[in-house]
Image (cartoon, rainbow, N blue to C red; front, side):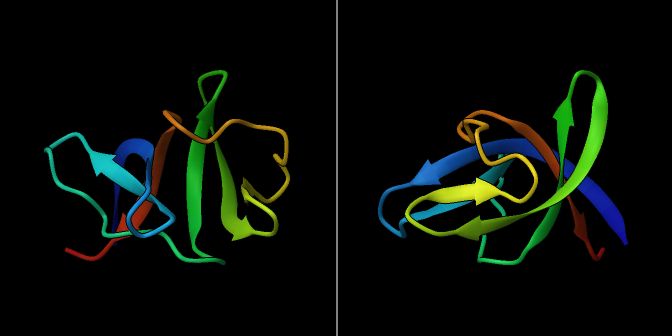
Length: 76
């Protein structure tokens, strides 16, 4: 399994966050409980995405998600 890097973007049609990868493709929509790493202060921080009243990252509840650099495991 390799990790692909991209940017978190909100998709209004699906009401989910998605990852726009550097190669121009999309992940296809994130679901509650999916694990990913977020880049903070030049360090990759493991977390998972969840939904309550709004989408948030576990352990980073106050972080604005739109535009964050993330990476996620992808089987190739």
